[in-house]
Each structure stands twice: as structure tokens, then as C-alpha cells.
Length: 261
Length: 226
Ligand SMILES: Nc1ncnc2c1ncn2[C@@H]1O[C@H](COP(=O)(O)OP(=O)(O)OP(=O)(O)O)[C@@H](O)[C@H]1O
Ligand SMILES: [Mg+2]
Image (tube, rainbow over all chains, first blue to last red; front, top):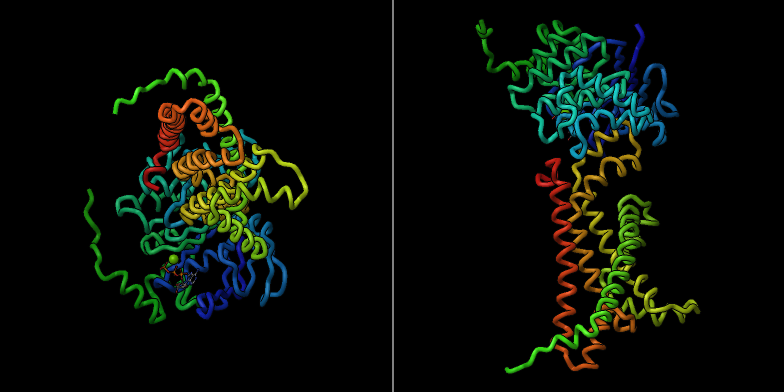
């Protein structure tokens, strides 16, 4: 299996605060990797370093065999245009959707292909139609984001990222800002993507979702991957005390299987 | 008491007042034509320029905002020609002064508008692979400008009012014409009442236009929540 993404000895500090400490991670094509961990453990920072929303302090990122930047692992240098090109190959979905409010749903989805990839109008439209259909929102193409529910907005944001036909998708707590009844539709969309073979790196607090879709789960603690493995190993039979504590906190109040027939 | 209003005299010279109004609009129009884009350039330089650009630009903006416009006008009309050994007519001096003067204020309006845009908009456009110019052009400025429309209009009206200073360098704007008619006819009350009314009508029409524009721009729903 080919590796879409290789993260080598990635470190990131904000001033004196060391947030990521020599992280190594490879993500193979079509796999879904879920990152869990306590608040402040560096999950968002890890994701944001992958597409250089934050510039790593040290370490290397390799996307489909291409080393991003130049230099040795300890000190890399990057050009703005190189990073912009790299980001175009990676889709990112944010907690707060961040749709462009002055554009319709369709224009939002067409924006990347048009402005960044310089696709012609027919191609932009084809992609917008295709990916809006995929997230089930073709019928909202002409609406403005402010007229959509949170769940619909997030699905548009997913379509917007997909329209770039990225090599890997990053999700940073994509459902955390949603009302509970809207979480399911977004998770469902993400699961379909995983089933289609999209390569995904997901930060989430939805452990049930992680259990269902992840090929691999990472538990991040104090800037290091403390434990990793398949969902069964990490979420059901954790070995590390920190992982157990984290799972205890998440499972304090649990519903027995509701009878929904 | 017992003042006998006589507008007939005013209206005999109404063409002069209209000419004055046209001149006022000319100066205002040119000042806006140059001042607004220059304001954007200054704002971007102050926001994103390297320090060697940012600092002087900030100083120029503050200087223009903190000196009386009439002092600037006199400087450009009387002082600058001496300095550069050139000739300059009142119209040119007025356009230069009010372009620069208003650009400083427009720069602050632009800066405020850009700063008011949620950082998530920068993030999302950056994540798509846009570079700064594209981000500004496609995502940030279109939203910022919508929010700035009221502040812009207020500024534009302010510019128009400030152009009344051009009379001091003998440029025949509306107020200058009104003044000369008044001095000739001694009908100060009527003349200045009509002149004020003309300013009012122009500015009022502009304000109404802007209100419609705001309503139109607000149709996507984000301007009111902003
Ligand atoms: N731009 C920044 N400047 C300074 N410190 C930062 C910055 N971004 C993150 N941090 C710090 O880095 C640490 C890790 O933050 P990060 O957002 O990656 O955590 P997280 O695991 O995503 O947490 P959460 O679950 O709350 O989202 C935190 O202590 C945070 O305060
Ligand atoms: Mg986070």
C-alpha cells in the first residue's frame, strides 16, 4: 500500500510551549486515521501542521512522495507559493465550517477550483454539482450559507474541500459546533467518504464514530502519540493509564442500547 | 422681524449656483476617485507591508488625519509650487489635497473593515490553497466592503462638506458662488438658504441611494449579523 502522507519527527512549539514532540505518522492510501486526546494535547496543532496552517518547528511532511520544503529535518524552509500549492492538495474541514457568506452554496464549492486550480467554468460547475450531490445538498445550490442549518453548512464545507479533489482530507472536530441532532448527518457524510476510499485524518470526540470508521486510532498526550492501533485495541482494550483515564471521562454517562423499533 | 424674503434675485443667478455645485461635485468626485483606491493601498501597506513601509505609511496616515484640511490645502496651493517650482491651479490643488486627506480616512475605514472579518475566512481560503492576493480579492474585501458601505458614505459626505474650503483659494465651488452673489445682492439670507438646500438635496439623495444599496447588499443575510 502506498503512503499518502508521511509525517517525520514533527515538532511544534509556541514560544516556550512544546505542543508536538517528534511525531512520526504515516497514513496509507484510503485509510482513515482518527486522533483522540484530551483538550490541549495538540490534536488541532498536529492537523494544522500537516497542511502548514501552522509551520512546524522541526520535522518533515511528505505528501505522495513529495517532500514539502527544503532543508534537513531540523530546519526546513518553505516558500509561500509552494505551501499554497501543497494546501490545494489537502482538504480541510473546520469546527466552525467557515463558509464564505457572500457566496451561494454552489459558488462556495466552485471557488477553490476556479481561483486556485484555474478550472474553466464548465469544470467548476461539474465539480460543484458532483460534490454537492455527494453530500446530499444539490438542492441547496443557490442558497446562501446563512440560510442553512449547521449540519448542512458543514456538509457544504466538506463538498467545498472535496471539489479540490484532494489527496487527503483533514477534519478538526467537524461536529463539535453542531447541535446534537445535527451531528449524525455530518458523521454519516464522513463515513460515506471513508467507505469510498478517501484518505482521512480525523480529530473527533465522537468515540462511537471513531470505533466504526477508523482503521487506526491514535491517542495523543502531551504532544506525543502515547498509544495507537486498531479501534478495538485503543478504544476497547487500552493499555496506557492516560488512555484509560481519557476513556473513563468520556464514558461517565452511558445509555444502554436504546430500543428504537 | 418684517424681513422681506426675495428669492427672485437668487434665482436670477441660479445658473451660477448650479455651476458652483457642479464644481463642488467635480472636486468631490475626483477626490473620491483617487482617495478611495489610495486609501485601500495605504490600508494594505499598513496591514501587510514590511516594517520599512508600514511605519512611514502609518505616520503619513496619522499626519493627514491630525492636521486641519485647510492647512493642507494652503500647503499644496501656496507652498508646494514654491518648493517644486511648478504652477498649480486651485482645482488641482483642491483635488490633490482632498484625495490625500480623504485617503487617510478611507485607509482607516478599509483597515477596520478588513480587521472585522472573522479569522475563519482567512483560514478557510488559505486551506483551499489561495495566496494572500486571492484571499483579499475574492474572500476578504468583498465582505469587508459591504460592511464598510455606511462608513464610506459618511466619509464621502464629509469630503463633500470639507471641499467648501476651496473657496479660500478662489476656486468657484457652490459656497464660493453663493458668497459672491450674496455680497453683490446683500441677499445673504436667501442665497445661503438656497445654497444649504442644494447641499442638502445632493447629500440626501446620496444617502437614500446608499440605504437602498445596503438593503440590496444585505440580501445574503450576513451584513446584519456581522
Ligand atoms: N497559535 C497558538 N499560539 C500559542 N499557543 C497555541 C496556539 N495554538 C495552540 N496553542 C496551544 O497549544 C496547545 C495545544 O493546542 P491544540 O489546539 O492543538 O489542542 P487540541 O488537542 O486541539 O485541544 P482541543 O481539544 O481543546 O481542541 C494548547 O496549550 C494551546 O493553548
Ligand atoms: Mg483542537
